[in-house]
Structures are given as structure tokens and as C-alpha cells.
Image 1 (cartoon, one colour):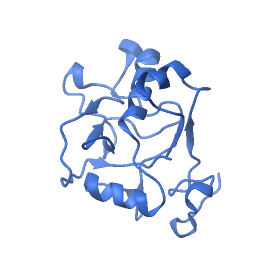
Image 2: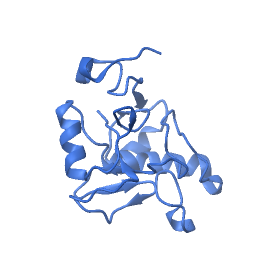
Image 3: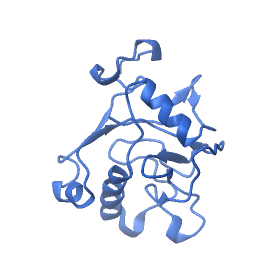
Length: 164
């Protein structure tokens, strides 16, 4: 796999994301069009891994600042409608077998509770977190969405990845 430095990143014209990984395409080949339509989403691309800073997962960043950093690169945070598509597909594939050990889905890596930074910021009308602490069953799942986050709050277990 080719590597690329952040300085050489060319936004939407590049085949590599800001981490130097290939983009993961989530489209009708992976998930039925009806699922996208149900949530008002369109096919999209998402970073394979969470955003890096100085070689480590970029954590302790607020939703507002993560949006600014993505925008600087000509990118954006994944939207809640896209996460609902992934949640739906994940639920259909994993069912009751969803596990704290699920580390990837459809090529998207670093989804597990076992990661140091196990939550990700998602865009919507207000900040949203993807992932959760697997404390109780209703919060378990790589694509569980937490709607109770704050615009300016940063935490060392919360990171982000970009989409386009």
C-alpha cells in the first residue's frame, strides 16, 4: 500500500486519505440501495482508520474542532444518516453476535471497545458519538450512536475520522 504524507494530501482528488490509507467506499455493492433510501443517505467514502496526529489516533478534540480540521482538508465528518446505514447493515450481518471484539466492518478499522480511542465524533444537528463502552446490552455495538454529546467538549477516548 502506498504511503502519503499529510502535506501531500490533495483532498477529493486523492486515492489516499489523510492517514495514507485507501478510502473505504460504502455504496450499493456493500449495502442495498433500499437501506440508503430508508435513511436519506447516498453512497460515501470514509477513512479506513481514525484520524492521526503525530502518528497516533487524534483524540481529545471537540466536535467543533474536528469539523474545522476536516474542513481544512476539504473533507467532513461522517453524517448521522451514513452511520444509520452502517448501523443497519452491521445489525443485519452481526445480529446477536455483535461483540466487543469486532474491530472492523466493511473494511472500516478501529471500531472496537478494545481501542484506546473507542468513540468517534459524527456530524448531525448536534454532536453524536459512534461506538460505546459496552457497559450494558443496549449500548453495545460498533455502530451504536450516542446523541448526548457537547459541541465544545473533548475527551481522551473520543476521536474522529473523515468522510467525503
